[in-house]
Length: 479
Ligand SMILES: Nc1ncnc2c1ncn2[C@@H]1O[C@H](COS(=O)(=O)NC(=O)[C@@H](N)CS)[C@@H](O)[C@H]1O
Image (cartoon, rainbow, N blue to C red):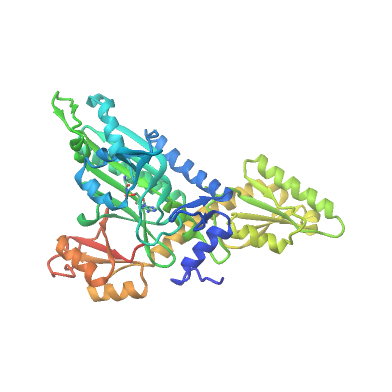
């Protein structure tokens, strides 16, 4: 399937499904429950490496991993009015145990604010225990009624990395929002995934939040995907649970909370944004195999070539560079190239009689498909250096591709036509009035992502009402 990566291509969706199934990452659409797929061994290893990455970032910033029950009683979920209202249509309910009707129906958690606040109310009595930063990496369930898509819009999110924090003051929770944003920046930067950070509009914040800050990225088809969100919850949930703590000045008050989460969409972004015509291009940080060694069969000296290949694989593995040798007799080198390129292995080492004779190896990069000859005794350093170059190249090229799809326009019709032709994100001057913001969605057919979390240059006139702009609003076609 020919797919030009840089053109905003309509068959991105087919490419995406093709890579996930052909590379045996995820078997999606065949398991007999809509919106749920099966992680296959290779994909499961990618998933484990992504989770290890976010775990490290959370653990080194004082977050403590916990594990809450999957089932949430309706009485808890209903505590925070806006929250239950927002999730009402998205909850899977358990209503029976064996042959008995349950007296209180139980939700499969769609997210865990109410479960965590309920238990914090038992655990936390005073400000000396604060702040607390918990997180869990669990499955959450949402009865999505729009078309489901593997990893992007599923009914079981299997890698929901949700963090929940609690603080003595609004300001300390605000500081935590900033910390969460810097953690998510590090996470996406380490994977070379580009993003814009926006404060979601009032009408599109998380149900139960004071405000929501979201990370959005642009997929190769030009559509925008929300890949992470950070919410300041204020006292909404602690008031709903009547949870008061003793403050430093001795007064009793409701503590303030935040929550933030990244779902399977992070893996969807790694596959979609870095992939190419040959399949996945895996980031070295999450690739289950970093180097595949392929011996080129030779009539004479065939055994020597294989020994040479085995020696190379052994020295790379001993240096901690996960390497696999593909000495499958039944496949030709060309078939092996196709097989491992589809799976996005960052480096391929080809060794034949020529390399044996000259004590060199030929290294082929998966990201640029460039080859280079390397002396055997420089192999380890060369591989390490090239893996670093791959990381840098993946990040810079994906940021450039995204930046080319973000444009500033000062006219609503131009914004509409831009979204229809190029998709991506348009930024228009905005007076800050929600009425004007909603009008922009109506008139462009796009969705308002919100205003830049940081660094908006404020100039021009609101494209709807003409009054002086306070900031810009980002509009896009989203998943
Ligand atoms: N059906 C879905 N499939 C895949 N990812 C989803 C789905 N619904 C939401 N997400 C992702 O999950 C992230 C967090 O979800 S959320 O509703 O915005 N926020 C929360 O649930 C908060 N409790 C923070 S953990 C979103 O940013 C979005 O990227």
